[in-house]
Image 1 (tube, helix red, strand yellow):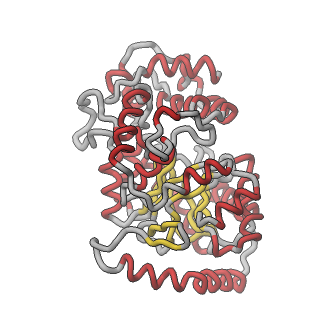
Image 2: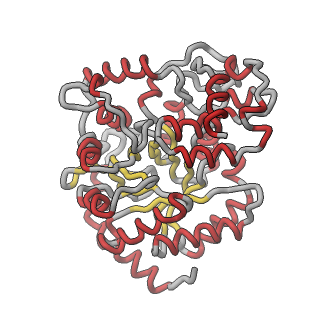
Image 3: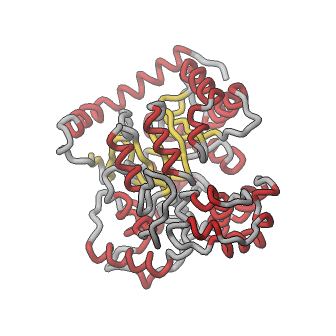
Length: 407
């Protein structure tokens, strides 16, 4: 993609002009030390700073797999959502194209766009850059606000020479502003590395009410085992080093929301309480959610700036107790322990797309991408995975069920 220095300067100038009042507010809000309030309110939406960046991000942000129709998408931005998470492969690139049309409609300065690239063994710096250039064309922008590695599962990929070379060249081109990554599994290793290496400005991790759940038993895995859930210690680590945290998988059910009236607390739905629970953690900047209709819009936006009530917290604990038995927290201990090399965490992650999100095609594509020795058929039924799981998940039966449905 060709670069036009004047266009880029104009874009940056526009962004700076539109954000001057925000920066003034930001200095007053965040420059007074740890006692400063964590939120800034504007026109009914609440915003938090994304780590050490200057980006002020709406507490509720929008996922784009799938996106709502254009009319609702515009309404969400008008209601204050200013951060959209996407990827080069969502809807075969059409999600980025739709977001690009939105930006033309509302103005580039109204929305922070985060998109992602995958890293495969065959990739080179040139192929990674080509993927990002494709995203720039589809989004029809000069600069991506946050450029992320998609689904980082090992610490090594964060410092891979191919990735770093691509990032450096793209930075010289002005292709992005901040670096980040999304992580679905092995979060303790990946997030810790992202913070320690100092190369990443933000992390996007799965974090939802099921992280209330305590481990079923103590498991000796390695000396700095993070204990219950593990994610909370990682959030504290990231926060302490100025690395922003965006929470994904916040509702666990994506766009397919079930009727859970029995868990309603007063006028607040269970999903609203779930989002409040995530945002109750001030180390989290924003909760990504998929919003596909007006009811979901009102439900989710109603969680911004609202305190989680004690009764809602009690209801959430009951919901987790009754429904959390087979929830995979993505710690990857089962995968590391498997003597056969079965990709247990990846299988359970794919199965969740089918079971909880209703995205069966995506689930089957993800399962099909695994090597033959990584699929459910390679399981020897030895039970090592379940001994390693600190949450008591019936890994073997879940993996076999996934294999039957997704193969």
